[in-house]
Length: 318
Ligand code: ADP
Ligand code: TRP
Image (cartoon, rainbow, N blue to C red; front, side, top):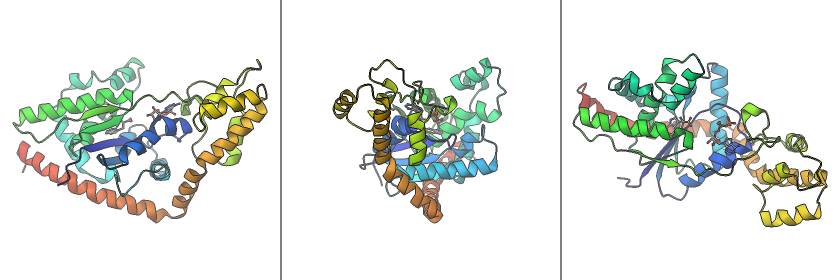
């Protein structure tokens, strides 16, 4: 028996990755799953994404890109059970069982649902039910720790409530209660216009930008003409170089924005070259990705099926 606390998290394959995602989330994820402290299960939440991404080609492409991106930034498939949610059918099966013990008013209290409703958006049943699929994701593996961003905290509470409710109704202790691990807010990475870097603002530096692309984006960083330190350049620069070194550089080249931007291009390029190289390697050998996902799927299936046998017994269908 493996006694290490289980860590579970999912990532949706939506959106092109940028360096804000990398410094704000991906890097922390990779660190957390290293070193053997936990037994980590990380999956691509493709069925969660299906609510908003309804184009088969796009789903396939983005799923693959996300898997390659995580591997390129250092997620270690020897340490992590890395798989696609859709390939482990226990997730949707358990979701149905949770649906049967969950009330509509309870789900109507979810922030995501309330926001969508406040904006008069059309809400799919899947979106409404999002917290139950997520509870299944988490509870199938006896997760002790669930690293997520602050915005996902309520979903972990739904998973805890649902575990308790199931155990109470069926007089069992099949499910253990997970704890959220709220990833510390790394300083928000600003985009090329100084606002938060976000795919919705068109101000990103893509994670896998070529050098030319990097140069173009960096040269486009908005600076004022006050002759002071160009804050938007500096804020990105300090992600890849110590503030101590930067202070010297920015003093030496005070007011010379073009030079400072060229230095930033250089430093970003150096920082991301190995990650980009690994990504290209994976792109050139699609079997590596298939292989990793196949191994992850087998292990996730074995663990989740053992849990489902207890669950089916507890509810009386087996
Ligand atoms: P976007 O804002 O581009 O849509 P997402 O909402 O998909 O990004 O974010 C995915 C993850 O990346 C989240 O955990 C989020 O906290 C992190 N993240 C996104 N943008 C930034 C940023 N500018 N600075 C720090 N972290 C970020
Ligand atoms: N809802 C999460 C997000 O949008 C993704 C997710 C799906 C997840 N299932 C999960 C995260 C289970 C942690 C555990 O970021």
